[in-house]
Length: 118
Image (tube, rainbow, N blue to C red):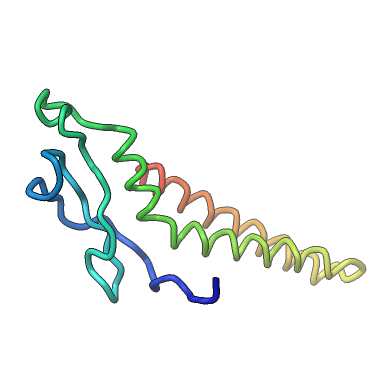
């Protein structure tokens, strides 16, 4: 695929129960395009029972954080490759290890957001 995704970060937008089959849907928004995708938030039978749909909500959070997850993986990959290219230079190795640690912290933060734990 040669096309790039919509620039992020993505967010969860408005919830809507008037679309679909009686469930509740939530929009995925990008800065340049609100409501570019719609995800089931609560199933129809859960709405009738006044319950939530935790797996669907978790999936919506994962999708909303997909752009950040991609950025975190790209940063971790670059930091890991940089660490391999500095052998023999202790100062560069320390800098590469520090960037790898920072990239890991950023990745852990976006993983927590994707899990709805922010």
